[in-house]
Length: 71
Image (cartoon, rainbow, N blue to C red; front, side, top):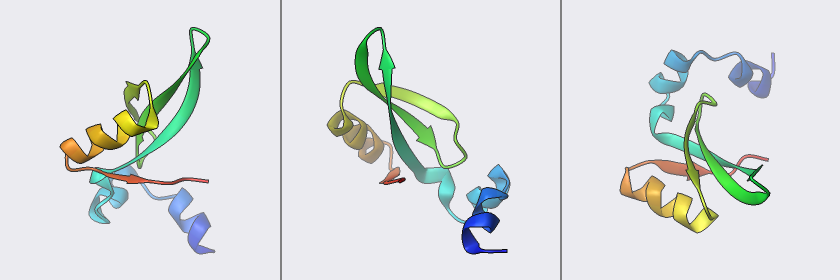
């Protein structure tokens, strides 16, 4: 199994053990015809919605979270 395949099968508890409980990523979405940025935990749970990526970065820093880039 590759590293990517292994990561896809980790439970939320396993992510937490790796320190991922403080890791978030952004996903651009369209809401009411406007682009917004959904903030998700490493396990994929949505936890917030921001007007801009800059606001999301600021909120992540304010809450001691690490914002990562997901491609």
